[in-house]
Image 1 (cartoon, rainbow, N blue to C red):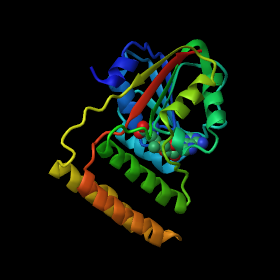
Image 2 (spheres, rainbow, N blue to C red):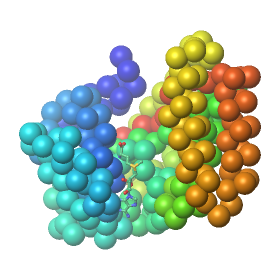
Image 3 (cartoon, rainbow, N blue to C red):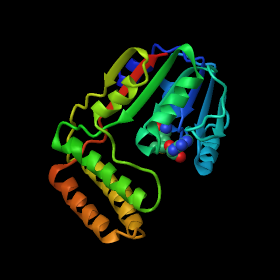
Length: 238
Ligand SMILES: C[S@@+](CC[C@H](N)C(=O)[O-])C[C@H]1O[C@@H](n2cnc3c(N)ncnc32)[C@H](O)[C@@H]1O
């Protein structure tokens, strides 16, 4: 059983809030893995992402609303489940967002944090982590909020700070596959390195970022990569 199913499969979601839902990728993860739900609401502060999410999930019972997660325009205790997927490292005020999520969660409701982290265990696992960090630096140089991924410990500390009960921590254990899989290397070169090298050229600090991209391309061929980043999923109860 995959780790998302293991972590979320027992959750009777009821009214579910997905914070920083992006283009709706995490809605798919929820729908595939949660035991059941009545309604899912996805919020994000990017108009473009909300529009894209509405396009991809137009026919389903999912509601997307543009909203700032630091100041949710929602009454207290109105959701049975609140979730945030792969977005802690995209937030300016993490603590404030998590507190807001807790405020709108009913007593006894489930709180889910799923986040990739930087603690890869093998060199090929670390390649995808380093590529992610390089992309984060390019986004930052271009004015977007995108931090490097956190350590697994730091993410657990954020969850522990919420004072939830029955905190359960699930880890995606990566079983290394062929790090030099030709298709993967070609895909990463084209859709990550080359794409972001173009973007890096628009940044003020472009020379350093372009040089780092060249180093990462070398690393991709010398060390190889895995396709999944390390992931921790934390589920607690209010
Ligand atoms: C990596 S993306 C979304 C990931 C999505 N949850 C998924 O797993 O596919 C991070 C998102 O956080 C959103 N975001 C950042 N700060 C936010 C805030 N204060 N309020 C709402 N959304 C925010 C961004 O607009 C972006 O769509």
